[in-house]
Amino acid sequence: MLFFTQCFGAVLDLIHLRFQHYKAKRVFSAAGQLVCVVNPTHSLKYASTRCAAAQTPAEQGALPPCHHHEAVHDPQLVPCTCPLFSCPWEGHLEVVVSHLRQTHRINILQGAEIVFLATDMHLPAPTDWIIMHSCLGHQFLLVLRKQEKYEGHPQFFATMMLIGTPTQADNFTYRLELNRNQRRLKWEATPRSVLECVDSVISDGDCLVLNTSLAQLFSDNGSLAIGIAITTSKVHNAEAEM
Amino acid sequence: MLFFTQCFGAVLDLIHLRFQHYKAKRVFSAAGQLVCVVNPTHSLKYASTRCAAAQTPAEQGALPPCHHHEAVHDPQLVPCTCPLFSCPWEGHLEVVVSHLRQTHRINILQGAEIVFLATDMHLPAPTDWIIMHSCLGHQFLLVLRKQEKYEGHPQFFATMMLIGTPTQADNFTYRLELNRNQRRLKWEATPRSVLECVDSVISDGDCLVLNTSLAQLFSDNGSLAIGIAITTSKVHNAEAEM
Image 1 (cartoon, rainbow over the protein chains, first blue to last red):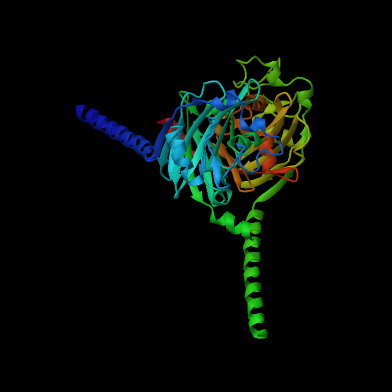
Image 2 (spheres, helix red, strand yellow; image 1 turned 45 degrees about the vertical axis):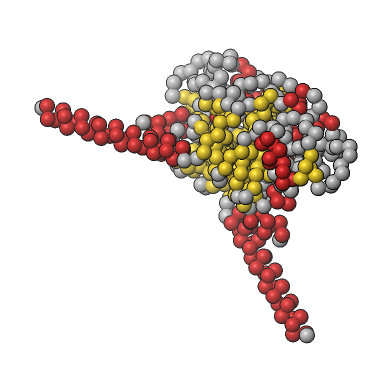
């Protein structure tokens, strides 16, 4: 009798071990992606004048960029593309990344696929979560913004912009993916260039948009994990040429 | 010289033919899916009392279903699940589909993957686009609703519900996909049972939600094409058992 009890116990242990292994495998495969914790920043630009507010509707979403400096000495100079601060800096496109890192302390991550983990989603709007992503020989700016387009109803807007020209941006496709609780939401699009104002992209609604209720469904303990992947989009270019 | 010109012309023709073939292939593969044109219906339920409005917040989203009849003779009877009309009908779950077809004239489509083409997206809220989808031995109800949750700001809500019990619904995963203009939006979730009120699902925001601007980006000539696919979700069940 004791023998059978022990045998039964051993079988149960084996089943338990198998489940543990299965669970560990799932966690491990998830851990294969680089997870980057991004803390929120209360936007200082919002408090005073935002470029979108200063523009006429016809100007919004159109190039040249949204920060207009009165005296532009060199047409190749671009303004600071930081969505957080009204910054008087201007320089060549090639040095925008180092300006954003050094002056505005925006982190940069390497890797084809990363997980952007935005913390403290409950903080009141306007709030931004920002990171740079280095991939396929280019740098991208990922912006998650909590904003009240309709008073009293904050929404979340997520977009990815290439730190490069609109022509360069057309060569890529970015994907943002939320996955939790048997629900999955994927947004795929061509990134816009940082020379187009991030405020315009968000006011046009041409990005991943989440209501508060959906954001809560995908959040875990106040944090929202967004899977990010960037690929080259040769097919799109072939179609455009046709 | 004429020979070379003719050769050059022939090469150009070949290139053109190849592009035509490529285009035709794309159109053909798109045409492989059954496209169903769905016309809008102005919801009559909204005009008077909607079940969601009659419920207390604690009741919303909870079973039993949202239509409460004062005298229920048989606990196995379910009320009419049509999202459009306040209908006094009740019957067994097995005959809900024939009631929806015969009384409420809701079309039913067969096929694993279909394209739901909602017309006249510009019509004012509240408006519903509804169809039944027969797949994997079950029937599903697809509801696209234009509704003003915030006054003056209509949004689109799309969800798929199983005409069956919540336990049966847990065996499936549905996917709604929008794809146009180099943008793609995918929503994947477990369908809810029609015994849960569609109004509750929409007020909870547990569905695909589109702002007007996003809906316009995905629309073509006032119509919105939603690709629909249903699969069985054995993996989810295995995880739930663990």
